[in-house]
Image (cartoon, rainbow, N blue to C red; front, top):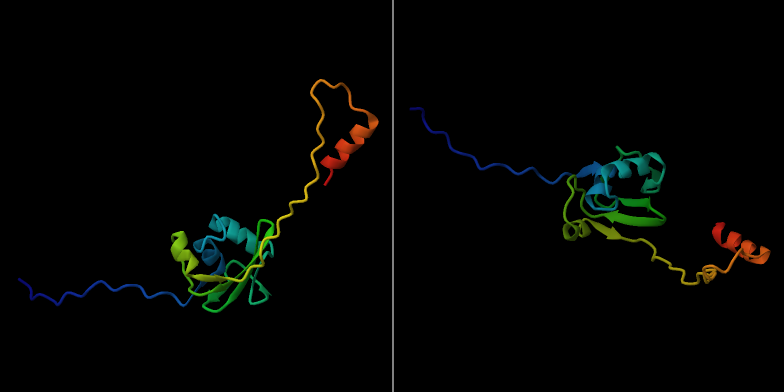
Length: 135
């Protein structure tokens, strides 16, 4: 029999000091998939510390990341760079949100309602319908 060597406890991988911005945006759940985070970087919708960011740009603790997510601008500060997607409670501890509040417009015009079977719309009613349909 061979002499037994002292067994070593498995070593944990230390938390990384930096990570790719697309991985971090996906890991903290700002984007649903990593591919959409990468596409946002390619499209110029992500900046790190005021500079346009490629998907491979590294982020560290203290960096400020601005990303356009849908029609909203998100401004977040990196607290902890992570590579793997984590649950929402853990993801919330990895960033500080400095985003401006969402402004909701409740002043939608009343929809144009016509009774069913009322016949063909008049010229005035057609113009009103066209005005509602155009952006």
